[in-house]
Length: 158
Image (cartoon, rainbow, N blue to C red; front, side):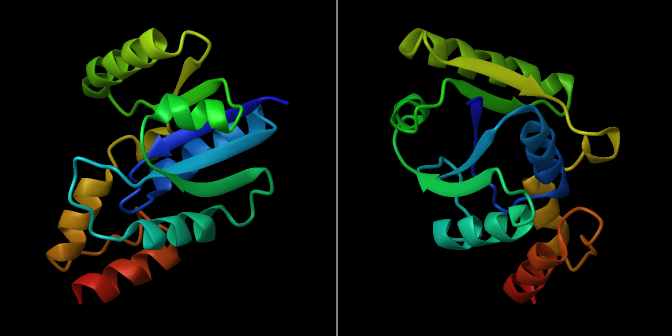
């Protein structure tokens, strides 16, 4: 079985994330969307909310499961018996950070590979941070997130 784990804070999950998940779901038998509990970021949504939103977005993808995790990603991947970590690259600016992460993960777990995917061009500029900032300022984010996520953002930011 070809399995991949796609980790992130998903605060909130965007159309860019869901595009990458759908691409991975076509390539792999099993995709685990791993919502990080431990984050250096101050999340807008709780871990349970982020998991529920991601589950809503991924509901139609039968080979995708959404779970939360804490601790080292490589430990989570091993426990889930997954040997591939998927990361998204939106722009060249993402590459340096992602390259560092991949190198560190390889050093800690040489048996786990990192796979980079790029989203469709129309999603390349979308980030959770920008979506939250626009929503916080009363802007329309409906083109960047699913209707469920849009409703959650409107409820959160009024």
